[in-house]
Amino acid sequence: MGRNFELDPVEELAVAAVGDPGQRRFFLLAGGAGERATLACEKFHIQGLVARIQQLLETQGLGAAFDPTPARNTPAVEAEDWTIGELGLGYHESRKLFVIVAREQLGEGEETEEAATARFWAGADRVRAFSRQAEQVLSSGRPVCTYCGLPIDPAGHPCPASNGSRPIF
Image 1 (cartoon, rainbow, N blue to C red):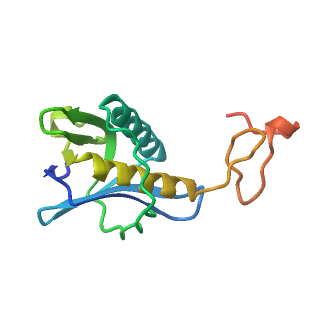
Image 2: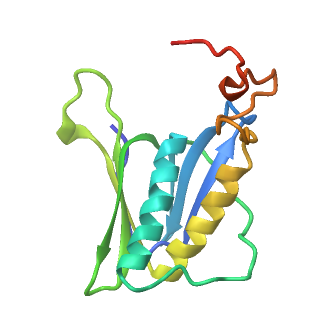
């Protein structure tokens, strides 16, 4: 079981990817009040979080305001605290803060109550900046084929849209 985190509010919120495109490991990084969390996750966790941030910004009337400043550099990845199994996003209306909630992925036979949790509280500006930075990290991976939408591997791309063969799993 990992350590629990409650960062209210976060001073730093970012995504990092380590490794070569197609083999990258993703991390959700958060820091505040002298604490720092490094949580391993899957790419789909970050993609879903970015999509939900944009939806909630619109729903709350906070819009996706255009910010011309470039996304900041990705911070260095420290030792991984634990791996995310579930990731969610909420909005506390009276506090006007977003909360990212993560729950640790457990192994076989471990009780759900033993799972570590993390809650990262942030304002609209911080989650908007996080979303931009995360999109930059996500887009720096493998290029996407314009015909089929699948990622192009460095070893080649058997595109099904151009009658290429693709292994069936």
